Length: 277
Ligand SMILES: [Zn+2]
Image (tube, rainbow, N blue to C red; front, side, top):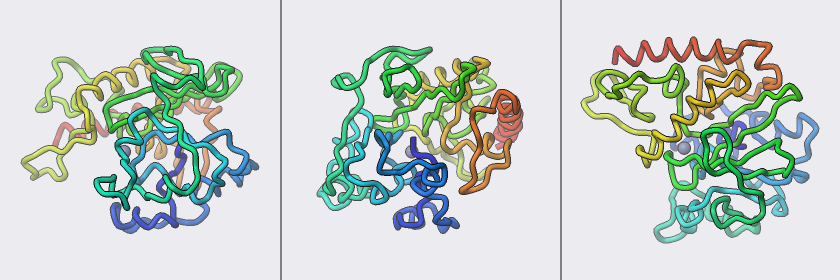
């Protein structure tokens, strides 16, 4: 699910929106999976957690026979993309017209067996063997999905959480009640001040009331010893293992490495910093 997506030197939108990141060719998702012996043309599908510019990567790197999966409501939100009147300006229209086949994952989808999993009420068994579940995780934007994948034979799982949260400090350690933005910034989903002097808050979640529920589910899963929650932007996880752009980390080893504890400690530190804002 969008590994390093958006870190894509061919995506001209990204530098304009996010500044001028250094983007080596070796950091594209297609390059990374090729490096690990997987031909991008052989993929069963591309699953986008959501259709934001820093997550969809460059579809041009994949042949059109590779199906694209998005959450229900995504296509109407895109509305034809940047070249369509009223379309989402940050999404390339040619990704929609270039021949790729899109399937929305949601209530109307019959392709995958629907189930519930852990705290999430709606999930779909992607391979049909219980090794990977696409999960409806609302809040960030229309059609937001997570992916729960088994990472080894010991029963360890990883939740690739997309933008369901942007920081460890938003879901673990759990925000204390009563939830109040004045007392604890973790209690507000992705709400932050751009600077200590700012008088208003910005929010990373389009639908905060739904995001609260999703955040609670992240908290519940992170409480499990054999599940690690990994939001796409979570710096605590990458810092804990010193992962650099274009680098790799073998998730099957996270239990042995103590990664959950390491990133939780960094999350607590971040929380303490947020409290001072
Ligand atoms: Zn996003």
